[in-house]
Amino acid sequence: MRFPSVAAPVLLAGLVGLTTSCNFTSDQTTTTLPEAPIHTIVFLDKTQSVDVNKSFVQEKYRQALAEIVEQNMTNKGDKLDVYFIHENTSKAKALSLTVRSEKEGLENANATDREAIETAFQMSVQREKGIFLRQAMTKLMQQNSGASNQATNIWASLPVVAKAAEDGAQVRVYYFSDMVESVKGANRRDFHTNPPADDAQAETWAKEDVKQLEQYAIGGPEVTVITPFEPTASTRENNPHVTHYWQTLFQELGGVSMEEK
Image 1 (cartoon, one colour):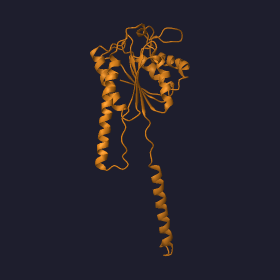
Image 2: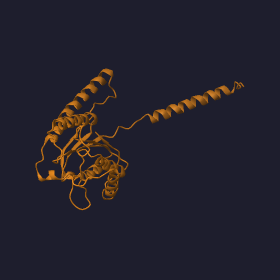
Image 3: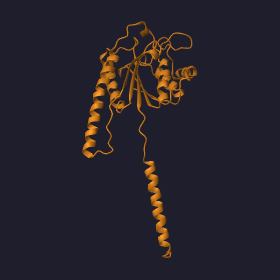
Image 4: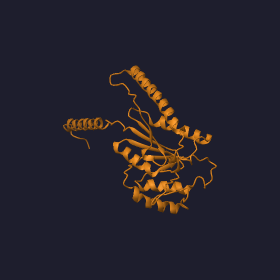
């Protein structure tokens, strides 16, 4: 069926109006907010069960730190905090670094100027990354010969993570540890003397312990564990049930998944 000729202008006007409306909507929705800064927290195990002087451990941890700095410290405001894991983990902040490099405005820059601005910014960030990595490596190699090396208080890292979650940043947490919680006293875990016998027990213990720890609103951080174990390590040394305990604990605290490397 053909439309009467008198309707054509009306139809055309409607299509133009629709197109204009669509363009307006598209223009409004393409505006994106800047990404939240990345807040990286590194926990370095400074207890006697982790020996960073071993060549395998030292190299594995050095590479991991280099990757963390390279991937996470990329824009102004990105932050790196380093804590020591020992008897008093929550009070053991060893380092706090923030990216200061700032990119010049690109609004009125031509293509050549944009490239120069971007290059200058990346060079500045890379200089900062080099400084950050050297400082983090210094903390990694720092020895703890005090009495605090007798206890591994990983639970105490949770209020640190919860505090970081309050500022709206993307929180990424890295444990450089064997994750063998070892604290004496009632209602605590000492996996050196009493590790979970199987996954079922690990899961039961984790769900019991969450009742003591659920006060910490840790949000939804990315959690990665970098272990000191060689690929040939026995299950007695690298106890998979301990890993299952922590995976369950983080899951129960808010659906947080834990990656182990």
